[in-house]
Image (cartoon, rainbow, N blue to C red; front, side):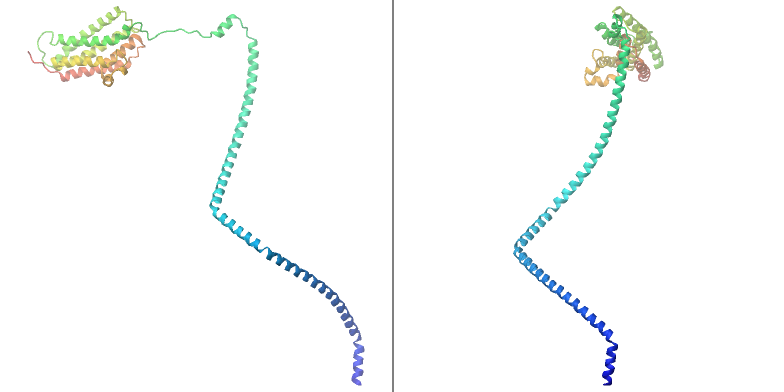
Length: 354
């Protein structure tokens, strides 16, 4: 009874807590009931989802053949893609190269466009200048008095006159240099044949005495023969453009050919005379007197620059019919003259008395 009374007291004392606990238990029961309804609704939704999954699985199973066929086609396409990989790479490279060329062409096009723009600007400026100039010219022409005299001066502003500096009136004048050269060679041959010995008839003592006599006799005859030859061609109608130059050049040419023949005859009367005749024939063929040397045989073209008569013909053409440009010819003939005189002293041989 005491314990019961004590428990009753504790129960009374704890009744507020008990009331709170009962209230919480009721609230939890209400919440549990609400959640139970949600759980029932979720179960229904899950059941619907399971049904949909089952239907999807059935549809997937019915489409499995199409899926396999699509997978095969995808695999075949992948194989073709792998087989054409090189072509694809090549095409990609070509595409890249084409893109670079396109970029380069675009740059050139841009540069050309700039040049065209500059050209159009220049042309516009030129047209403006032309228009201005034409306007000025039109104004100036309007001030000009156009009468008969002015018209003649405009139509014939310059008068021409002709002057022939290379006058060759006849064929004889054109052949004169060649014939003069041949004549001088004949004079040299004749002189050395006729005056082979000294004028006194006594044999010379040494080569220097021989050279002194030949220089006097042959030089005098050559000079006289050259003067006579010049006078003769004057009578024949050959009028030289440069008279004194022609005469002096003929004298130099005569001395040169005389020195050549004298040296050969001084070496030997007989064989030297024959060699001189051969030199005459050789020079006649290689001098280019009748026709240009380019029309002669190859042999004569080769020896042409080494023959004295070649320069004699060229020099006389200059003094007789042209502009007297004979500096080269005079220098070459002077060299030939000195060389032949020295050669005569070297090869001279005293001839045996017959």
